[in-house]
Image: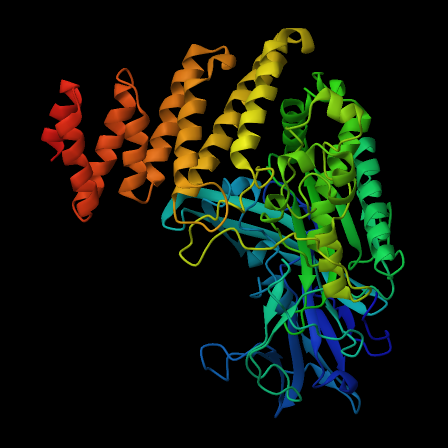
Length: 633
């Protein structure tokens, strides 16, 4: 394992006759930085966490002699100005010699030490994070099963029983008793502090940052710098692929790894990545590609990160069956017009491999320290996405670090010309991000920008949202309507299974409505980029009037009502609503009522909204709308 000291500087761990863990600490390790971590070996419920999951970060500690005790201090920055925040445990020696001391760490291993929790808040059982759970070890039902020694890593295997307490939204307690059982490895390793230089963080790329603040080690001055979290590539990275992973998925992961090798080679860093099928004796710090048959709707990346210098020691990328299945359904909806292979109840294995490859690129990018860049897809035009030369260099999303979106703008003719339907290459932005993190040749990002997806007021930035394509959202929405109309018009011919056809058609209608909702995000502020407020209002109203292609009257009515209601709710200026009202026809009374209701809600502290209502009241011939204004005012 890269970045670890040799096993000559190591603990010796053994179990006594009572099953207690005796840890011999050599004097050579006293005062040194030691890392503690956890990893799940087995679990009774894969909805809570998965085998191979790491604790979120490792915990950095140092052991010192303090009188008759051995003291363990957690090496953390000053917390809220408290310099004693790191003092955590004291152990009374069981025995000692001239070169070492032995202590009993059974309680440390069997109790959930802060920072060693391996259970993600957003696991499947948490309903997307709404149910906040705490896992409390049941000490009398837990035991240390065995100890292990690997080169540079020593630890114990704990058979743990947990009582789970749940709270909805963190406030309302869920009644009942819930238990979980897991085998968890708790382990120590000694990092080589000289193996990797610290890289100061910048805001030009999306990458995991760490803020250094306070006294973290005696030889390090107080600082407030931000650094990037990253891997040490000097000994390479090998992803050990779960033997349970389907064959088509394995091929997709392998392809993703090779694409990364091509990218590293382009910036002069060789081909540091590989993958192999997992073996039972894999190191506890081995990188893993895991398959989990669960309902989790996204991938996970479990990283073991040093909280002091940002080094990522190891990581597990977790691909949930439900996530890949959702992407397969998404491909059927977004790509079936262009790719006839998508017109099937079960996608062929080569298509599944391509989808897994796209998902794995983002997951591997996360494991290397990159974070999402939803702004990148705004860096191209609609015509770019229909140009083979462009998609060969930039892909579809303009970065691997965006939630997979397939090229729903492409036609069958575009696909036949070689236009990409899914992300299969690291773009110039991705190469620049890797170069920033890991060194190598300088790369021009070719105009692709990075930004978070929320502004300083925590509003979504419409140029940085999931699911959009191009910097021309109105043109893209119009072209999507054309493609979805073609899909629904041929749905019975393309999909022989009636249930599949119904499902695809329903999702096609919904996906178009979601694109129109994203258009309305441009009405939440005066944005420097993107279409004007008037252009958005005109485009949304025109699109909602022309939904006959959906071939479903109930769906048309529902989406017209819901999308227009969203337009009214997000409009931050009364003038936007005035523009919308001016475009409405006499028979669109429901929409008029929505505009009036929203203007009334704004009028109490917005004189302009009140004036617009008065103007509408003076000109409107619809007696119902006039009575509504009179009542609401």
